[in-house]
Amino acid sequence: MATSKESLKDRLARYREIKISVTGRKSGKRISIPVWFVLEGDKLHLLPVAGSESQWYKNLRKNPSIGIAARGAEAEFQAVPVTGAKAVKSVVEKFREKYGEADVKKYYSGFDAAVLVRLE
Image (cartoon, rainbow, N blue to C red; front, side, top):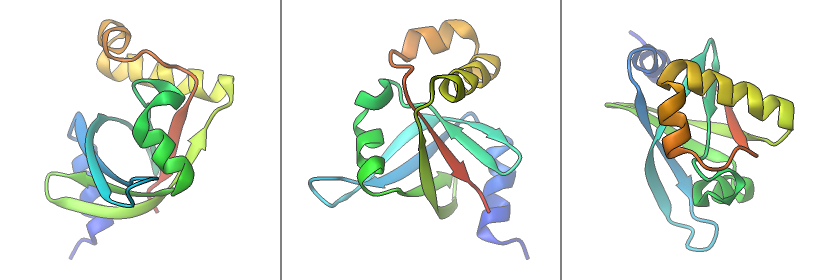
């Protein structure tokens, strides 16, 4: 029987969008948001649409616990904020490869932060 993390990884390989859950830094409530992602082995890369100004990113900085859900498969992880210019640029490139440059340009405005989630 597959663990929830294994079936989650299996789904991540097939889908274009997932739901993340973070804890509100002021409300303390759990908030779910649909996001795009790039999966690379055991690493899940997330790019906040408004960079470091994105609310869910600010919430993660306060509480790094993140829920990742892909159509029924769900697991909890620790998120690592990525702010180094070179590292963020690398994530942006991966997003452009997966979703196309035009869509990344259309939907994303901040390129000063990314998030790494290790799926292990």
